[in-house]
Amino acid sequence: MDTVKDNRFVWFNRGKLLAKLGKLEAALDCFDRAIAMKESYYEAWCEKGCVLEELGRVREGEICFNKSLGAFCGDISLSLEDDLLSIS
Image 1 (tube, rainbow, N blue to C red):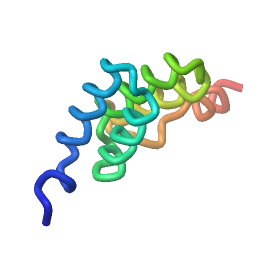
Image 2 (image 1 turned 45 degrees about the vertical axis):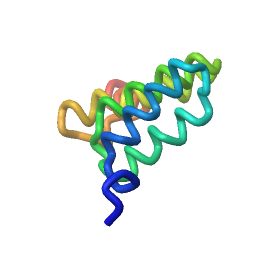
Image 3 (image 1 turned 90 degrees about the vertical axis):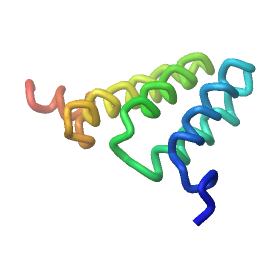
Image 4 (image 1 turned 60 degrees about the horizontal axis):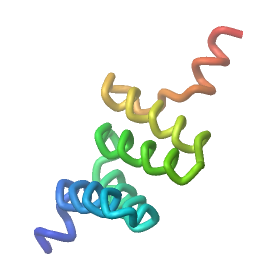
């Protein structure tokens, strides 16, 4: 096991650094890798949402923020669509 490539914290921190440097697409890749290692990684979902919004991909960002909230609350399946369906 490669301790760097297989460490979600490394990918998360690399994504944050790349985002600060304005390398947003590369940052998204890092956040995706971190999330692939732990789907309920709410911090990575949140940072991904911020980057997507900065890229003008607001709807995708909102979905990530909802995934972050769901992961934080222990339910990764939480989404805006689920919320809207439950109140209609």
